[in-house]
Structures are given as structure tokens and as C-alpha cells.
Length: 147
Length: 155
Figure 1 (tube, each protein chain N blue to C red):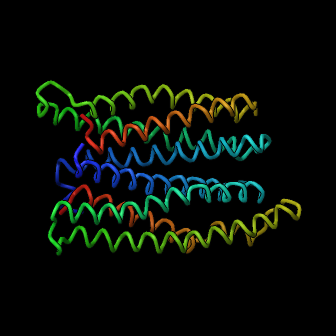
Figure 2: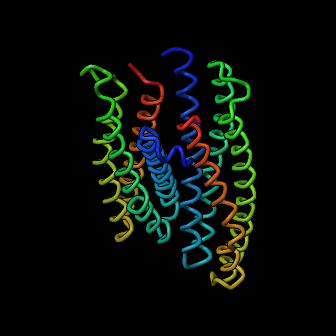
Figure 3: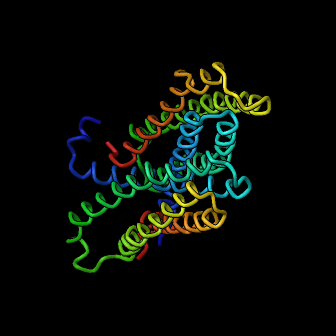
């Protein structure tokens, strides 16, 4: 681990992968909580949990994932001679468009937490599910190096 | 996409299920510890069970596909980083299982207290915040993190 700590290529990829795993885990937790909240609309703990999971875990994890993705890309973009492979495009598209979905999810979670509206819960469930599907697509494209 | 890329893609997808499912379980467990009433703790600990199929599929997928990759890529039989990852995988699963049993005890007590007036007591508080029980889950997480270090570093 000490040797790895001094290895330049190790940290960006490690932190990018770790951030992505934390992001998927937090969005999964928020999705589970939001669907459970449909059956128990009065459960304040679920409403609070969805919001804080997205704010305290998912948003910082998104930042770590995106920052280190950019560092890796800046280091390696010369390898592809100006023609980025499909998997790189999918990764960036999901990261950047995903931020909008994540922030909208956070807004819906806040609305559900403070207002307790079933509509807010349904919007949160839908957005979190869509974002989870987007993240799965990105991880498959990036790990399989889709051309 | 050739055979290697298929194997790698599914191996990484399984790793995401394993780690992200564990993260989701950990987040729900932390929220259960911080909940005010036993009914809230019980509710959040029940939701941890929804993550278990994800963690289980991910755990089995990482080891099976990892061994398939080992064979496909002709890595040496004495590769330290692979054996270290297998040992850590066993440790993570054993500790995670023990931590899960501790959470199950806390959930059962929280459900009983919720049905008896929904007032917390010292026993539930101590069980939820038991340093030994929580340490098992945190150590499982550290073992999983070390597997990720080995998979990226490949010393």
C-alpha cells in the first residue's frame, strides 16, 4: 500500500472507482428507501434518510468520481489520438447528465422530507431508479471498454 | 467485445454489486443507529435485507469471474495479489456475516420494543452502538477496500 501511495497512476483510478462504488451504493440505498416509503407514507425516518443519503454520500461521491475521471482523461487522452472511444463518451455523458438527475432527486427528496407528499415520493423513486440504471450502463460500458 | 472484455465487464459489475450493496447496507445501518424511535430503527434495519441479494450475487460473481479471468489471462499460480485478494474476500464475507447477525439481533429487539409502545431503552441503545458488533462490519468494509487496492494496483 505504501508503494502504491507513491505510484502516480494508482490514486486517480482507485479514487474514481471508489467514488463510483459509493455513488451507486448511496443511490441504491435512496432508491430502496423511496420505494419502502410508498407503502409507509407517514414514515418520517424514511423521508429524512433518503435526503441525507443523497446529500451526505451521493453528492460527495459524484464529485470524487467526476474529478478523478477528468484527471485520468487528461493524462491519457493522447492515447486515442483525438478520437475518444465510445465508453469514454458514455462515461462522461452519464456523469454530466447524471448530475442533473442527482440534483433533481435531491430536490425531490427534500420535498418529500419536508412536505411528506406522495407525489414527491413517486418523483424521487422514478428519478433514483433512472439514475441507478444510468450508472449501471456507464459501469458496463467503461469496464467492458465498449467501442 | 471479446471474451476477456466480457469476463472483465461482468467481474467489475459483480464487484460493484458487492461493494455498492455493502455501502447501501452500511448507510441504512448508520441511519438505523441514529434513528430516534425503535420503530424507525426496525424499519431501516428491515430495509438492509433488500441489499443482501445484491451483495450475495456480487460476492459470488466476483470470486467466480475473478478465477475465470485468472485462468483466461494465464496469471501465474503463485500470484501474490490474487491469493491475497481471495483471503481478503473470505475475511470480508466472514466478518460481514457476523456483523449481519449482530444487526439481526438489534432489528428483532427494535421490532419488539416498537410493538410494546415504541420507547427505546438502554439495551437497544447498547446493541445498536455496540463497538464490537459495528467493528465487524467496519473491518469487513476495510477488507473489501483492500481488495479494491489490490485489483487496481496488482503488485
